[in-house]
Amino acid sequence: MRILDVGCGIKKFPGSIGIDNNPRAAADVLVDLDHTPYPFGDSTFDQIRLIHVIEHVASVIKTMDELARLTRPGGRIILATPHYTDFSSFCDPTHHWHLNTYSFRYFGEDNAGFGYYSPTQLREISCRVKLLALWRYCGFELLVNRWPRFRKFWEHYLCFVVRGKVMEFEFEVLKN
Image (cartoon, rainbow, N blue to C red; front, top):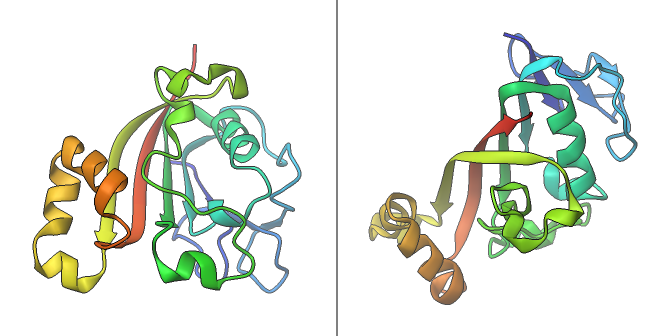
């Protein structure tokens, strides 16, 4: 399995090829993540990992398009990012984006009605939200992750009180 760890930092995923723009990182290849194309061919990787990276890039759409180009059909993109209601989303001055569980719907089946922004097609395999400890102990995390309708209700009405911490996504890359 060929794995690309995008923005690998100092803890590159075992067995992966790491890319980062920081020369002090454990990267195999130094790449400015805001400038595409990355130095790999189309459909090169079975899995691409972005762990706390997408919030740092200049364009989420352009980055996701590039990741889809690099992933083989049926390959996976694993992504983790802070939920926009978490303190860490706003306390880091290098964060450009503050995202929620619906931020990647542009790449879904109906493109949220905005298919003209990106040709990339992803199928959400999983979305897991981690909540702050108090709300996790009260059972809210289970409700948010188990029932999509409750997740929607939480995002629309409760997330500023029952705050999110981290979101973890797994997407399948769909190509013709």
